[in-house]
Length: 207
Image (cartoon, helix red, strand yellow):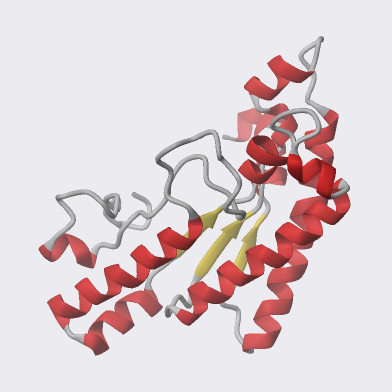
C-alpha cells in the first residue's frame, strides 16, 4: 500500500489475465524449500523449480499482451521478493529425529549445501530477467510457536533451530554479496528478517 502498488494475484488464479498480468504475479507455495525433498509430507506443493518455470511462462503471456521488449522492461523493473530456506530446516533436517538429511550432513555442512543450492535458484532468476530481487533470510526459527511447543518443555526458543538460523543468515548475505560482485551490479538485496523479528519482540512499542 505504501508503494502504491496493487497486490499480486496467485499465478494459477483464473483472474490473472489481461491487464492483471501487468501488476505481476505471486508464485509462492507454502511448505516448499530450496531442496526438492523439503516438504515431502505435503502432497500438492509447487516446488521451486516449478515456480521458476511458471515465472518464465508468465513472461511469455506478458509478451503476448504487450510485446517482448515491454515485457522484458516490466520484469527487469519489477521487484521480486523471494523467501525460502526455513522449511529446509523445519520440514526437512529437523522434521523427525535422524532424518535422511541430518544423517547425511552435520548442521554446518547442511547450511553450506543449502546456500550453494540457493545460489543456483538466484542465478536462474537472473537468467530469467529479474534485476531487483529482495532476498529474505529465515526468521528466528526456534521461536516459532509450533516449534517451541514441540521442542521446549518450558516454552523457550528451540536452540538447535536458532543455531540453524544463525548459521544460515550470515552465509546467505555473503553469498548474495558474491553474486552481486560476479554480476557487477546490486541485483540482490539481503534482508535480515532474524534481526527484524528480534527487534519486533524486544522493542514492540516502535511498531
